[in-house]
Image (cartoon, rainbow, N blue to C red):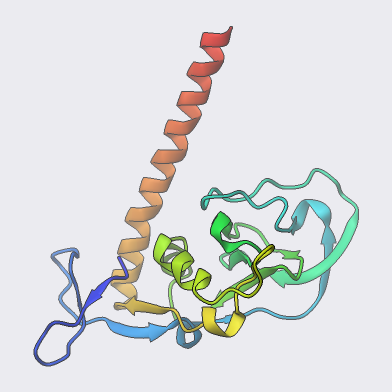
Length: 192
């Protein structure tokens, strides 16, 4: 997904693998053409707050805080993609399933004219991490370059195809989560 072959003699962009009912060409767009960084300031209970500390590595989501103290930060909406911008190699990327706010070390990408799930699945990839790491600043605590991040290129199909791709990938994610829960339950039984 997202990898587009432009080997066609007319320069037409078509994916290497796709669903048979789709045959439209894909547009190759920069992240800046299909999304933007959310800005501003908001206050929320800490249970609705996201920082680099409660985001999980390897695209595994985030663990909410239990505290209800009031905190402030950059607002995000359900469906926004949050990217921990310190030590990007840890792959801390999460698609918000509630509205809240985050600290300034977390970038909030809001989809402009693309399916938010499709955007997330294009960001939560090794290719994206490689792109971000190619422009980091600093060595001890590397930080992604916000301008360079928006240069990342994404293959963009029709909205209908975006929805189908995101739906299939979401089903796979749900299956993986259920399998992990089953494994943890079996480990618990074994210890008992």
